Length: 393
Image 1: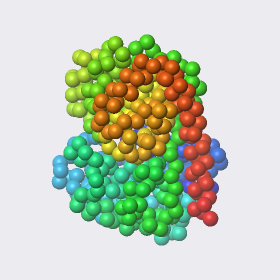
Image 2: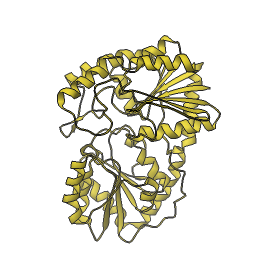
Image 3: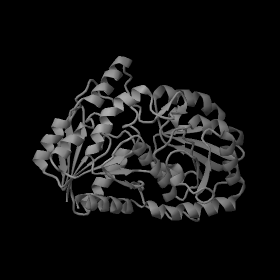
Image 4: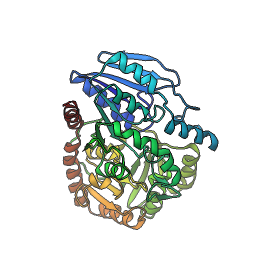
């Protein structure tokens, strides 16, 4: 099968978990004998290929490159989002690629910069089309539906305006996949993908296998870690403020990841003097091997959270907020604990419970490691291939 994958970015450029997933997913498809063509954006477009995997980079047809964290004036942001919603972006580039490659199927992911107009281009050529929902970019330009330190109950006027063309274009999609039932349902309730077959496929762990960590012993002082982007929506400050009373006698706090330079500097200046260790960007497997409990304190409705299955692969119990797709992964009282978002007291009680009860930690570690089998990446690929076959048929 010849498959075109379309995403805003592709390795070595990465913006988040979608790029990590797509890189490994493409490699797995190639390993199974399929031919994969990746279309992505780049400030310096080029073509490259390796066996059955070919990458085509295209120029961004908008007013600035939005993926490097550079701050922009509000009017420039407004122009960018208007063009991304109502323009045709890279639709002509994709049309030329399809004419040249003649794929059996097209699979789209994040389309910022390309614009959702590419769906109409694909539809016009009669090529079966699958789309995966990785975030809320179709509903909200900020991709999070989180504003003024709170989750949005619905779309504001600006989001409704900018999402209208995307919703109309979504009628061209043959099959839609949500990385969680929560993410898929939120789009369906918004009127998206009305003509598409619907599936839920949770991401597997693309960076490792089950490490059989069922027998790992917790440290004398529980090592509690956060791993991910440092941002307000991620609830890092909630975690640190809630758990500082347990430092240093019951637990050690370790923060892995990076974020906006100003926000990261503020976190370090506030919490490093109080004993919190910041590691910066770090290899996920190495980080998880060095902690006893992972805290995922998200305030926003995480669609999925790749770090959840990475922790399970390492046999690490998880304490996470019950938002978005997280409760579909973490079994409360089994592989970890769930708490209501922003409930710092419950978070502290769960971590303290694990710090005091080492037998409970061992049981949750075994359960977490066993549950990781459900998130093996080869199973994720199997599920997508079944969707491909059903869509082709």
